[in-house]
Image (tube, rainbow, N blue to C red; front, side):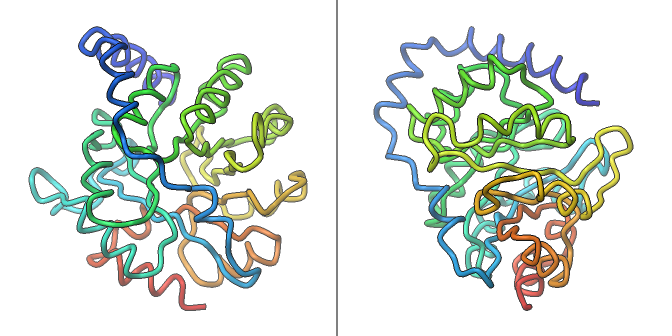
Amino acid sequence: MLDEILAAKRDEVERRKSELPFAELEAMVAQADPPRNFFRAVTRKNSNETAVIAEVKRKSPSAGLIRPEYDGDGFAPEAIARAYADAGAKAISCLTDERYFGGHLSFIQRIKESVGLPVIRKDFIIHPWQLWESRAAGADAVLLIAEALNESMMVDLLILAQRLGMTVLLEVHSMDNLLRVRPHVGFPHPSYCLLGINNRDLTTMTTDLQHTLRLADMVEDTSVLVSESGIKTPEDLAKLREAGVGIVLVGEHLMRQADPGAALRTLLAS
């Protein structure tokens, strides 16, 4: 599935580059409001507190449409983001991939006009052009997936993201990729990079919270560690805090509930 998505993304990037000249994109970035500090928003907290990056997610390749009412014009990302902010989220994650996740780049600005929290663009970033596009769209941070990038491109994207003032959430799914990216966490500046461990197995698409707990010992600075996927209960948050993991990204569990904001309050009620 990842290979299929990346092939489609390469075609999409080439199409979008042809539609929007880089000079125009660069001018849009120059005129954009400064990015909100995503890194600070999720790392400045008490040791007994979990910072939640709450995700606005319409559908996924494995689950399809998450709720029937999210179909068509019934999907309101700004309303979901407001509910998350009211419930105690520290930041918002926004899916922007259209083909596989039903997202849209315009969702970022709609969310930012509704809440004061920083927003991360969650997509399949494979080219520097997408970082400029993300900043022009109002993104304060971007997701980089280690499994989708070679080392050279990863380093180039980390440098460019820092130049544009955006935080990077550098995500790994496997131990091998954790070992590969570990030397680059915090490059080129330590306050611009977070390390994400995704608990979803890309071959089976199942999630296991123990994945983060197993790999956390291999991370030197757990204050920048984010656990992603498969987090559902206050007990899950407590287990992660015991392992030194105080930041989580939660999406599908919250979006499956009739009231995502209320679901987040329940999750944080520990």
